[in-house]
Length: 417
Image (cartoon, rainbow, N blue to C red):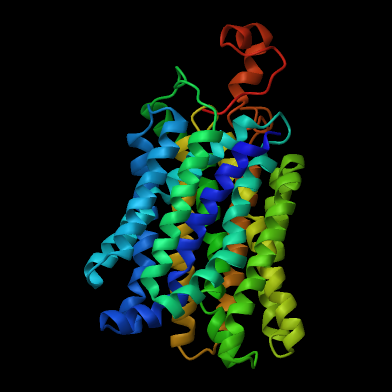
């Protein structure tokens, strides 16, 4: 499996993950500097998510006839501009616009990047390649977000976005140097992408992401408050708890690749079921500090274990037009972010206590599991080669002669574009 191109994608996802989550730790600093309240500053988190939800399908559709390497470069350039605009924003309104701009390329980048990663990998290792790209996102929660938060607290929040801009420039150079170029596939078009997005299995996969992953964010959004109000830790320990959640995410990403390559649907069923169990258990372990910390790691692990099988199943069901479906999956994840956080907050506001989001999250996880099981039951084996790896379905079906006509050796893996 080619390491250098996957490293370029991982560095890019590290920068994207850092800018996505760092605002949560900088809200008090931003609010003080711009003369607004923390709840109002909290809209900056939502602004990024809105950018992701809008940008994922829109930019993917606009770039449907653009070679994928060039598309990755354009998306990373937009990411750089958005973060630079955030760093230089003269006021709250400009910063809000900068956050939307920085979020626009997020989903499209991961959608295109997942297809490129899968096509770079040999048969049977596509999920490992996609999970490797996602590792940058998980490492961002261990290293990038705590470091960027500390930098912003000491040198000002603008310094954080300047550093993220520099990471974006590094990622842009790595993508330009390490991602191989290939022309646009003859079959690649917006019409095919839209038809693939309308596939019943793709839609059920997106619904699974919205409900199932919503269970993670129902709790993650309030993990800092749970740390100080229920676990009994001081405010200085919040960064450590969030980093432990990131460690769990990384463990989940490492396990997700090989498990998904072997059995995608069972991996998805198991991760969603485990997520519901861990969320319920958290209500009991939260009162014992060491047990609470272990549960936080497990929550990050089983939560992120759902992402790779969901991504691969959506891409495989979209067949040889997987880019828009893969990008839309990240819109679904951000809807899960917003919806899960809103439902968890509603439970707290109703007076059900700081740990009530765990039950909300468990219900969402079970709902996601029910949708996933329904999708599996409706999927007739062999009807559309459901287990053919994403981006490779057409290549496998072509046979050696057709591969030679496309300039590939009969036994070589499909290359990224």
